[in-house]
Length: 238
Ligand SMILES: Nc1ncnc2c1ncn2[C@@H]1O[C@H](COP(=O)(O)OP(=O)(O)OP(=O)(O)O)[C@@H](O)[C@H]1O
Image 1: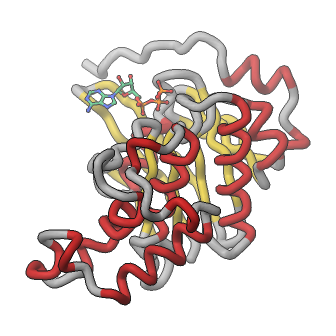
Image 2 (image 1 turned 180 degrees about the vertical axis):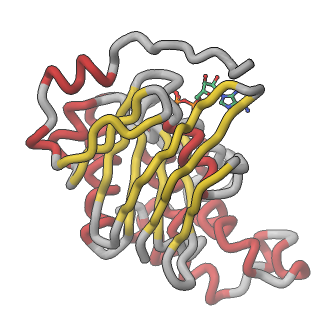
């Protein structure tokens, strides 16, 4: 299922943060979203999953699709197993009486969660406490939890900013693989080289607008200089 964003606008306290953003991500595609601090990347993703409310514009996740998000801060329950953490992605779908404790999770959910862990290459760590896994493994568990939401669109907000280069490479390659498997995936990255190597398309935001949207081979150093140029602060309209 595709993600379609049209004319997305958002202001905080009268200050424009998103100024008519258009973005489409189709199944099978991995889009890297680049841009300077404050250019509106997180806000755009947060609007898609309902964490921020757009002022204007259209957002649709095609058909019966669902969008799930993973974050830089991973938010696993460290003393619970990797599998229990992945099961948590499905809690919204369970009857309340089944969601109160991992002991009550249905067997089918555990099987589904196990399949999600397998997709991120961590089936063999299912019984391990999440807090004992490395940062990269924890982020992969968080991605499995997003998959367990039966997401067709996966959004990742700086998923590798806290990881070492090799774990970062693995997580970005995983996002690319998930896209190749049929999901629509968009990730905010602060590493243009990872975007160049793995993304199918690069979207650059600058000052709340799409300033670049092309395959990574088209991304020049001059484009990067423009994307990361110091921001012009737009004052609230009086
Ligand atoms: N809830 C909020 N209230 C007020 N201002 C906000 C809020 N959320 C974001 N902003 C502001 O909106 C602007 C864009 O923020 P956003 O987090 O979307 O940028 P970003 O491109 O993701 O930046 P970064 O790379 O630093 O994460 C920033 O100036 C930020 O301070």
